[in-house]
View (cartoon, rainbow, N blue to C red):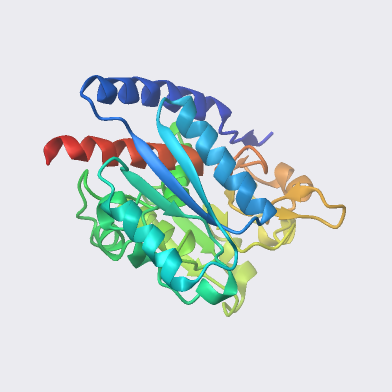
Length: 288
């Protein structure tokens, strides 16, 4: 029977530590604070931002959702971000994606100053990851960080393993490839133009799917040995309108050694990682 990599127990353990860290910072007059910039009222984005706010408040941190009109001008939007960058009482800032079409050309990774980039998208944070030469002042992208934490806490080592990642986004695929390489995995990064995809997925030790296609990965992509670990990053809806991942769970669960469910797998770990980055950004103020 395969191991279900639920994040609940890991999240509970980490949350306890985060609460203690937050309390300790407050005793030193550092009050961890984050602002989440939400443009418009996309239902999924509202859910994500609300979840982030609730978790931050759960550990004792401050979190404000800055809701902006969907038709806000580019100048007004940039002014809002600059005000947050200049506010010393705010330690972290994230810009909820996606942005409206008239703002989608903006390089979001460069808008939030590096010291407040708790999403880990700033070029300097990405270079620290690429070079494997970061320190406590650098932030790792939240979903890749959460995936690695979940595997580590589940006693799944990546060192020496062949990992296939499907999806090359700057949010998951590319930074995850670098992060796992830094932890001594051998990584193959696949995408929509990859030929003979199944030949690659059948031979890997760990398969990560981050392509946003409901139930795309079925048993035909897997090894017959039933010894693979499957990390499903997808958050989709199926033909019945039910939440599902990229992996066809019911068809795959009996053909692998371990698998993340959707929901309850990677998603909560992303928010945990965000809170970890926020507290690190707050701690960094002590060294200024």
